[in-house]
Image (tube, rainbow over all chains, first blue to last red; front, side, top):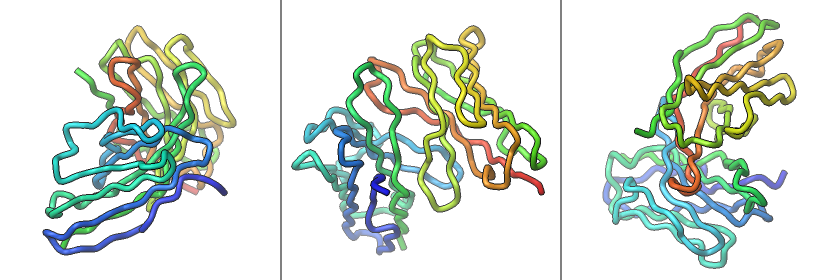
Length: 116
Length: 114
């Protein structure tokens, strides 16, 4: 199965530490998205890339968050100086460039971040 | 505003019966809708999508209906099975104003009783 892969699956860290998550999209997909999901809620959009270009960022993405996709393949999401409120599931999704405008996004199984 | 919501937080259905999950949206600029299934500990799994120029689309055991007049979306699951127990989300994409992001509702939990 060559779906979206996310690592690590679970990260536990102390408040104030930095964390980095990795996402490997489906190989032929050039669009990559990051979402955050808290318990009982739907995912919330954070940012997205087309190839290596970061094209949109949500207001949820504070200056402690940074995402990169340096070679247009895998992406990393870093959170600096983590806070309790950062505890959530961080989901990555990818999609192909549409021939028309509608292509579904396919999600990985996420990284669950727990801040102690 | 931009909101996608669901009418029922939990749906309990007998195995073998049909399930109907409802979703309301408020923005008439929404032109693409997707249903996802999410099982515990996993990411959302794509089920079916529909464009705003359609009012019905069928997949394997699933049908999505779109009523643009009342801004309502529904997912019908035929002959519900225990493996269908999960949380179901509808999501919208408004193009091009909101880029390619998906806006999700709060989800409906489907519990299949044997």
